[in-house]
Every structure is written in C-alpha cells, then in structure tokens.
Image (cartoon, rainbow, N blue to C red; front, side):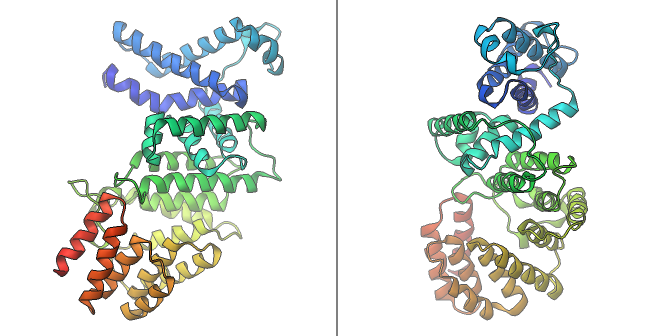
Length: 409
C-alpha cells in the first residue's frame, strides 16, 4: 500500500483512537483540541511521507507525533495551563512527563468511555449517531452528511450543538457507575442499532448497502462485549444480530450493485464464519433473565441463516415476531410478521392481517400486498405495486417494484 492509499486508511482506523485518548486526557469540553491535534498529526504525515517516504512503522510514527503535539500544546498554551492543567493529574516533573497512553488497552477503554459520553441521554439520537461516526469511527463531515442524506452545513451545526451540550452538561468520559450503567447502556445499544440499520437499509438513501457503517457498528459492539462492565445479554444479542445480517452481505448485492432479495440469494456466498460468530453471541446472550428486542431479532435472523423453507422455520419466525411486537411495536416488524404469516398460514390469512395494518403511506406495505395478491388477483396486485412505486424514495426499491410490475404485465 503506497502513501496515497495508506493515509486515508490510517485516518479511518487511527484518528478515532488518538482522538478518544486525548479527549479522555483533556476532558470532553476540550474535544476540539483533541480533534485538532489528531488532524494536525495526519496533515504532517501527508507532508512528511510524501517527501521522505513511508516510515518503518507508520502507526507508531503517528502515535509518537500525536503525543509530542499534545505535550507541545500543553507546554505552550497559557490558557490551558491556567484553566485546564490544574485538573489533570501528572507528576511534579512537569508537563513533559504527562502520560499520554496509546496502548491497546487504553485505546479500547477510552473509546468505550467515549461511547457512553457521546450517547448521553441529553443529546438527540441523530446527534449521537453523528458524533459516533465522527469521533468513534473517523468519518468526515461529508461522509456523515451522505449517510443522513443532508448537507455538511446541517451536520456541522448538529455536531456543534451536541458538543456544546456535552460541555454545558459537563459530561465526563468514563463508564457510568454500577447503578446507572444498565440505563445508559440501553442508549448506547440503541445508537449502535441505528448506526447498523443506517448502513443496512435506509429508506431514503440511494446507496443499497453501506458496509462501512455496518462494520463500524460491529466493531463498537465488540468493545462492549469485551468489557466485563458492559458484557450484558442485550449487548451480545445485538452483536449476534449484526453478525447474522452481515453474513449475507456478499449475496445481498449483485454484480450490478442491485439488491438481491432473500429468496434469490446464493447461499454459497453467505459468510459461514460470521454465522458461527452470530450463534456464539446468541448463546452468550441467553446467560441472563432479560429478553430484549435484540434477542428476538437475533433469533429471527438466525432462522434466516437456514435457507430451506420449512414449516418449523416459519412457525418459529412467526412466534418470534409475535413476541417482538409485544415488547416494542414497529410498522416494519408488523409487516415482516405478515410475510412470515403468509409462509406459515397461507397468503389469504396474511392478506387479512396485512390490510388491518392500514399503512397506506408506506411503500413496503403496498409492495407486500402486491406480492400477496399476485397469485390470486392480478389487478389488485398491480394496483398495490403502482401505489408503492409512487411512494418509494430510493432507487434500489424502485427497481424491485418495477420488476414485480413487469412480471404481471
């Protein structure tokens, strides 16, 4: 990998680590300082490596430079010395002896603690995801704007407001105490769940699949299960769900970049190693008395790793959806349950249930009814597909609906 390819790669993997450690050192209220030092480190890398070539160990080079820049900032910034340094703990030898620990363990600890700070309940869910992408995943403002289908000015304002909230609320970069950790962890899990879903399926996004978002959500979820304080059944269940879905990534997109429906996927392209990991984390999630929505969704995803249709498979999926809707109702889960109902009890039973939902402004609702009516009432099927076509916002779903219509004409 040459210098032009390596720097963007290292920015994605190392910027977030440097930022997290420096934020922990300086405090969340000085998050801008940490970001500036990390950015300056990469700017110097770009300039130096272009002239002198790659160092023997590029990552170690970045860490040494970022440490030196942090110490230099502490030494020369009078405002920092007057207002911030007294709150830091370091030896009497002075600022040069401040420990800037970029060991693997401290990086993991800092990122985990940063996750809890970013996912503080005082910040909106959109801002939590945006900050997670920026600070924990190394995404640029333009990338975050693309993920939210908005412009960079909107994202900048959103993140600035969230950072100001972190400052005014004086949020600390630390794990919550034992009493609060479960409540705060729920916020973190929700953010990671939404982050994964944003990559897996966005109803208004033209990109079919954002694997980078999904794998960042998986990486951050791994931090949770690798720490004793956050290794909970729900965290394992969420990670299991992500692994099962990610196992089908290669089969979900055809060579033209178009989405491939589950029934048409090539099972040989499924990543067996991820399925095994999903089963492991699903088993780990059963070590407790809690049954969360993540448990149920992971169990549903597990049954989808068995490609062959069988009554047992769809009966189990149907029962899991019944429990899921009791825990937390959502229109998408209700639609998915109706599809499982058609497989388990027949299409007419599913049509009766689907029409009770009344989701008339949802293109997925009409697309499902179009499919259910296809074998029995061609005109109704066409009517629903045409309504779905008017409502759909992304190109991937539009192509699928058009293919359904063409088969009926």
